[in-house]
Image 1 (cartoon, helix red, strand yellow):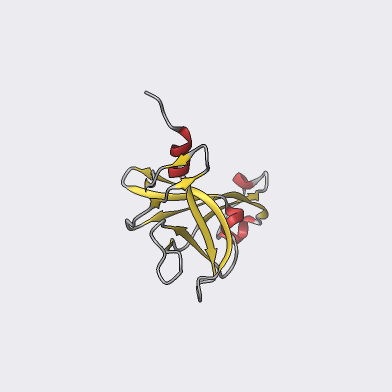
Image 2 (image 1 turned 90 degrees about the vertical axis):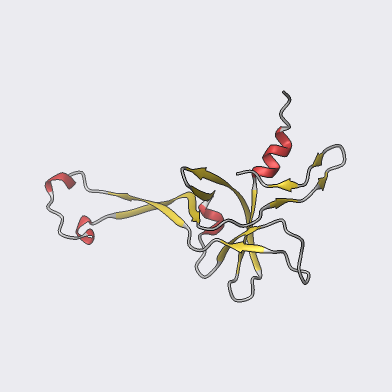
Length: 141
C-alpha cells in the first residue's frame, strides 16, 4: 500500500491565525496539529506563535469564505509550560505557600496546547502546486 505522505502532512497540519479579538484582524500566523487523547482532542503548537497578550488563537476551518472573510474557530485560552530554578535544599524547607519557594523564572518552553471542547468542521481545500495536487477533504486528527 502506497502512502501519500504529502497529502497526509497537508491534511494533518492546522493553519493557525492570531487575531485581535475585537475585529478578528490577523496579527500572526503559524501551524499546529490536533491530536486525539482518550476522549479529548487537543490543539498542539509552538508558544512563540501564540504567546501575545490580548490576541486570540484561531484555527482556519477551511470552510468557504463568507462576506470575503475566512471562517475561523477561536480556541480560547492556551496552556503554557514555564521552567523555574528551584533551590537545591528545597526538601529541607517547609513550604507554607507557593511564593515561599523563591523560584527564579528561566523560560517558557516553546510548546502550547489547549483542549478543544466542541466539534467543528475542519476542511482541507484543494491546492494545486503544478506537479503535485493536495486533495480536498476533511483534515486529519
